[in-house]
Length: 282
Length: 299
Image (cartoon, rainbow over all chains, first blue to last red; front, side, top):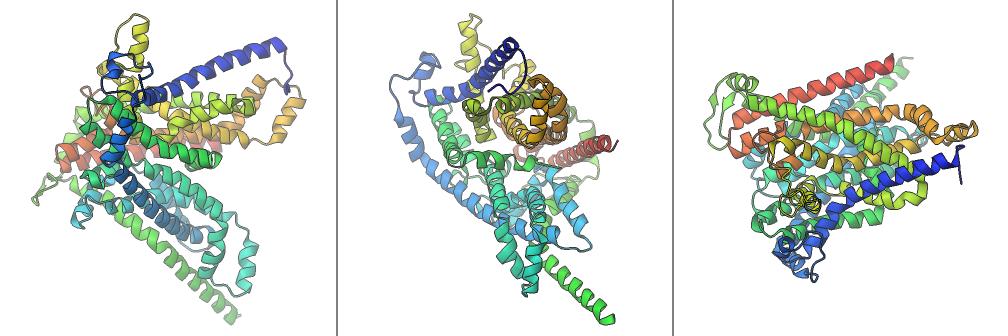
């Protein structure tokens, strides 16, 4: 059990301190969620008349019912549609771009790659006004379709970065033997490379999926009416509606967190790894 | 000989054609949504424009002159820098400590891992709202605890002196799990042999961490720092939701200032200047840090 040589007493002491500190951070991490969940079941004034951490008299599912009937499912549907379309297009476009950047030799390869990857640190705010203008002039403003273009564009740099390094790892021999069999470069991409890149694509789907699901700046700028807004803005809209009814807002927050928790339970370590994928740099 | 070289040439040509075909979608997308907008923002910064009317007045560098002497903008930039420094000082060490604890603790500490990870699943907007209420003067978590100790309510977000630091702590709460997971991945990249060798040579856990693991983690710490820096300079959602830059200018950031100028008071021309200034500053800071960090690596 004891992997390291050391005096027993000192070890017990340091573990005790470590566990105390770990527990403190555990409480700090968890307390806001307890606050959120407990209060989401209370009646409007119950929270203020009684203590914040007191359990509610009885579980008020009515808050949840009211939120669900108050358009929540519509926000949810909008988010799902935007996410699905953006993600499929993004993965395809990023894979297309990464293939020549990883496997071909041509003149501008390095500069094109550098150009795309350099865009990772560009803040969305520099593009906000022009994209707003464009969506107005194309008539996409205030519809979920306005979000898809910017979502994909801002996810491309990191995706190309990850996918290019992933495709570089695919052994040359596979490609060479396919080429001898008369497989052209385009067919090679669709029937071999894309298939072998599946794990990389999965990581990207998770990483970008979480970011798009939670995206705020574009969604807030490019949509206006509540029936066209996505889930992160649902909280915003509900807050306007129920500003004094804190339990109701806590119910909204709990409901927006729920899909992510479910995804976390299903995918666990894959999700954890995928979410930090963007950080794994040379 | 001649035939062979022409064959190579033809092959090269076909490679180029396929490359162009595959890179076309990405190029169009980046031009439309990133490169053109950047240029357009710089152009718009030379106009006075409210974003709605067709009337744009060319005013040259006036917006830029205003920006350079705009106290509000520089306060925002300073706040960004404070967030940047404190984020690195708080998030990386805490994230690394949590990761070390989980790495040393193994399977027994899974409960900690799961709970510590959850904040990362929440959107910034949701976190912003949650903490607006959790830190409220009446019925917030901190006020409740302070009341138990007999000290009365505490108004953390409404007080200009404490607002920025409170917001920074919330940002840390949100991102520490990210660095935790990130450093956990870095720990698993340390070869088992290294760990075994240290054990056989009789190293204690402390020695293993400080003398062996930490130097091996250095590249990861470096890129985590870069990531945290660039992220802090772009920061927007959470603060926009929680404080909207207030009270006064105490939590104003470049991004929140830009947004309010452009879409709340409809000074799109000046908003563009703010966005361009922000772009230049972020590019400069990231270039300088990359250069400094890479320079050290070569030495």
